[in-house]
Image (cartoon, rainbow, N blue to C red; front, side, top):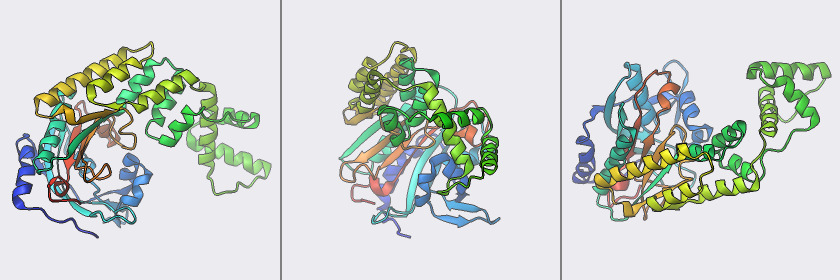
Length: 376
C-alpha cells in the first residue's frame, strides 16, 4: 500500500485551525465499513477503488475510503438528532492503475447533522473548506460548485410527462444513459417484448423474474449470454415504460444540452440557467434564489467569488450527494486530485435506516494536497 508523504507540523496545524474553530466535537469512526452498504451508496464503479477484507463475522468489509458514511453511521447508531463532528485520520483507496497516488492518506473534515437554514449551513461548510485549503499556502486554488437538485428543478420547469421527467432525473448521474435520452431516447420494444412487458409491469421484481423463468420453461427456452431473469425482466419493463413516457423533442433536448453546458462565474451561470427555464419555473426560480443567497453567505465568510465556477453538470458521478456540492482544486494538481470536497447529503440518513428531520452536510480536506509543497 503506497503511503502519503507527511507535511510539516506547522502546515498541518494551520490547515487544521479553521476546523477547530467550527464548534465540532472530535470523533473517530471504525476503519472497517460494510462493503455492500458502501457499494449501494457510491455505486458499483467504486468497487475497484476499495480495499476489501473479511470482517469479524466473515462478511465482506472495506477499509473506509473516506469518513462521511462512517461518521454518519456512527452518529445515527447513537440515536441521531443534531450533532457536528470533526475528524482526523487515515482513509484508504486503491490507486488507479498506472497512478502514483497515495493509497493510505490523511483526511480532516467536518460533518454536520443540523436543523435550521440549509443555505447558511452550505455557505459555512464551503467557506470552512476554502479557509482550510488556503491555509496550506497554495496560490493556485479554485472552487467548483454544482447542485444535483438544480437539474431536477430545471427538468420540472420543462413540463415533461411525469414518467419522462423522472427518467431524465435518474439519468443525470449516468452520462451514457443521459446521452441516450438526448440522442433520441430508449428504443421502443418490439410487439413481442411489449406483450411480455405488459405481463411483467406492476409486479415486484422477484415475481417478474419468476414469471419470466416460468415462461422460458414452458417454451423450452434456455437463455444465453449469462444474463439473469431479473435483469432481463427489469430491462423489458424499463423499455416499455420508456416508450409509454415518450421522448424529448429536439427543442427540449437542446435545452437540456444547454443546461449541462453552463459553466461560468456563479452569477453569470445562474443567469444562464434561469434563461433556459421552461414555463413551470417556480421551483427553479426558488433554487436560483437559494443559490444567490448561498453565494452571498460564502462571500461574507471570505470565499473569493472571482475564483469560483458554477458548473451545471458537475456532480453527476457522486453517489450520496443530493444537493449542492463542491471541490477545491489546485491548478497544479489538476481536476482529478481535489484538495477538498464536500456537499449536502440529506437523503443519506434514511438510506442508513435513520428517521430524522435534521439536514446533513460536510466536507473533507487532504492536507498533503493543500500544503504548498505537497502533491499527493
